[in-house]
Length: 300
Image (cartoon, rainbow, N blue to C red):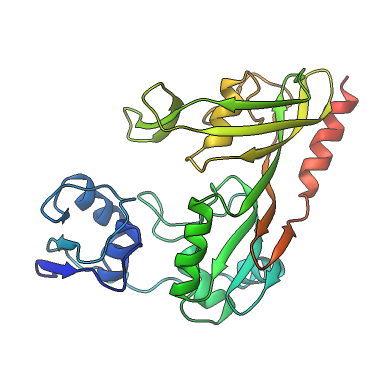
């Protein structure tokens, strides 16, 4: 069992609290770490905090005692998974790697899963110090930035927060969208369902959020769209599409369960990034996107 610690933040400034704690408490189950934060056992400068709180220089973080389990090492990824991720690399330089994340791959472990892609990166690429600069939902495929140093991580996290990295997604949504282009400007707030599941909804008390949608193709009951998030909120594109009356097909949180035929996955793909000093990068379109769209068009 670990003892109570008080850590004064220095080099970890800018890191999320949950990621910091997971590094400090190796061997403690992730579910326990998140419970410690939400119950108030973890304090920053004596105050309660959230998992996504960004640490500041000279913050004093109280870390309560916790039992270390025998499951302290990250289990090795299967050879097939290693090969899949290695084949998904679309760009690499001295600072970063950009991969075309497959749909269904969890980016970070959480309460319901001990490990995600982030915990496997060093093993997959045989490099030390690899960290993610941003996140994609498990069900979303496409461009994901992996940084090679802490300095690069902080730099690119700031670029994402400041909107300096351009992001474009493609999606297949329900119903024929009449407008050629529309900007959805609706505040978003996060909340928890009675079962503890995290969700996002439109609310006048939420954070300012804007998404630009461009309709590329239409058929009788669906549309193929491009989406540019002008802010970076959780589930932003998914909730804004739903709010506009065109939920993304295959979305089990915010989509239509009656639409037929249902796709096998969320029809959302992080198609491209524009990164300063790197340029435009594009993740190849998943084959299941084209096949599903052809199925919808044939049904007209």
